[in-house]
Length: 304
Length: 132
Image (cartoon, rainbow over all chains, first blue to last red; front, side, top):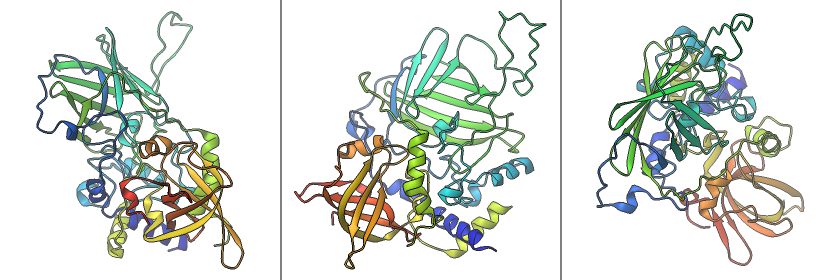
């Protein structure tokens, strides 16, 4: 074992201990202007409205609740057997090729190949499986649109009855045969393709596919293939809450579907609440690494 | 397989540390939470940016040597609730900081408290612990 390998194991050891306990112990973190369930203790919410999830939503128990530093909330990369993902051989190989800065395979900052710190697209579902923040959900006659804080991204969920692309892994585009007025075939992309439907008056289910496999699922380097499908369910609990559940179904990398978070509760906010700006800026990231990231990793030549 | 090996190795080490769910590009495991270091120096730069804000300051040691320390906070949206702004520090002003130093031993760390000569103080929130 090399010194570097030993260091990596040591860092992994430090990281995989007690993150869940720390999450539970951490005091509630508030977004200025937002309200949380603790502010309404003993006050029941009104009945759920039918077939709408529109609004600005914040995590009901505090803004730090959904920050999943060590990986997907329900399956953190902490070394516990119950959190071991059901990798296929290809999935495990892809996982081990990733060098995250969190989780059981983490490496020092300077050695990571995480695409996100360099400001490559975070994509979906990592946008909700990493540093998740409040969301604004807009509804039109044909779409549900979700606005995210990180990098001011949005996701369109079509509700006009269309189906998901049939085979986005194998786009076949021959403009000599297909008139340009028609849509080109779907191809894998950072945010995939999403459709949604109401399965009852209070349950909105989205399905997504067609993902570019250069994105990671989470901070812990969990991979996905271009065959991944994501199922996200929004359950309107009452007038003030929705519960979200997200399932990863990627038969190429995982032997069975697995739940990344379950019944994650969000609370409706004032329509006047503004979402803060948070951009990944390449020049700022480069400066951060030069001033700090390399030093904290202990990989530069600066004397101690 | 390798992840399992790593997990077992990690468990065998049995080290106790709070690896908090910080919104960071590195784990808090790179810092030593059991060693709070306090230094006083002159601000050279306050970098209000993503992924994390950085405060640089020159600290003169007892031997007269000046060491530049760089300490990080969280990203701006995570600091605003605790009263931080892009004007929190000005180059040339004195400040006393308390931090968890990096395990690498370099003059870098995670900022917990910043205290000014006029008695003002800024903390990173409840996880900063008691004011020094």
